[in-house]
Image (cartoon, rainbow, N blue to C red; front, top):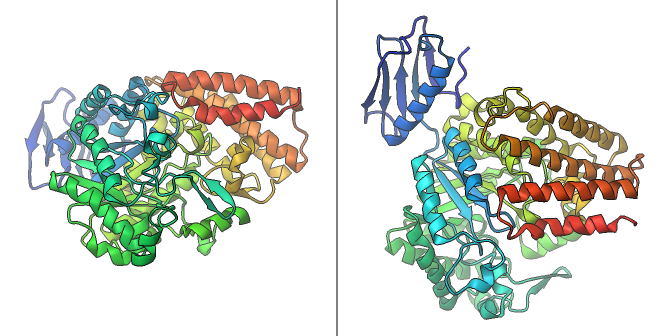
Length: 586
């Protein structure tokens, strides 16, 4: 049986193929769809026709897969393939703790290449070494200009466009926490919502703030060959609560936001850039879509899979009050809601699902696959230009790095061809193409542990009850009480996963490290399950054993962190774990 990844949309198998020694003719055929290719191995020679450089690259990759499955002759077949979505991107958060090492980027780029991604973004708030702004990035182990140029070259060699990404309006708390920049804040002293105090993270909506943002971009953008840039601008929660209150009262929040967005986008468009921005605010004000400047791309996001029969996610009452007061739409109705106002508007747009890994330790693969399938399916029927899969680092980016590989593989395959890849065996693909695990274990372990988050009796969104049990500050993500029997079953699953992991034999460059970091993450998830079990009345280890277990896990996970990432930002995630460790009686 011929196994290809991604599965081609059209493949005809015949009885006799060319000899493996037969020459391969590579022929440019501009009549093919963009990025498309055909392969014919049934003649005396092998023919690869390609529409462009991308099609040639993808066709060569398929030939390598076929060659490995040949036995003296090529598998006899004809393939015709091209993508459903022309843009297939991945966004990695490098601002909430993790800034990967160069070696980690090498491994990530290889996985993206295998899954046919053609765009990579590094979500940046303060982790670029901007000249004169050392106070902001000094302890963050930032990317330098030379490192960005090196990464840009590595990406280009893999057929991936490295797109610059910099927060320019919101999520600027790492800047606004310093006196030098506080005067640019919408709320210089922070703001209060439903009794909760929050630090300022939104710049004022004025010319001075826009000039500050463009000053950052002027230093950042020359390090990239891409003529695109993501300026973000999502979740302007403070808008009208401080410096801009009178302006919002006079013009309305939508008008004030749009005017500032244009201040950011229009100079970039005039310079020949094609800027991207998050569409969440605009889709809540769809009447503004027609006034967006020509040349920009909206990126619509939502990160929870649609629930069956219109079931709504339950949110703790205190947090629901915050959401209501901020006016955040958190109904999680899928991409049909997230795209409001964009289809048919003439504004190009991307759909942005998530890996579902953040706040989870070991992933939420079932949620991620549902979210991704909804994004691609809705995007295809609505005219999306592409997909941008997002990997966020909320609360310190504690998830194991390798937990992003299953959703990366799935999203790459279904955004290439949804009909042919919706039901792919993700664990098998991981073992064969990503980890090259000859024992066939690692992919299955990732899949098994990535499904336990929803099986404790607790309900959650945007994270897992297992991590929330370790970090009490994340209790706003969960509702309901744990069920003793369900938690016991989760512990059994995690124990079995740890036992199975010992048999893994990955040959990929980061395979051994993936086993180590996943074992530590599973151990932390099990520790969270023990804590839930204690609440539910299960017989669980005592404080002395829990303290020893967590101390060992933190030590090992730190080592894995430093093998994957730079040290800056590490304490953002490990600080809360250390607080939990200290909570056990001595």
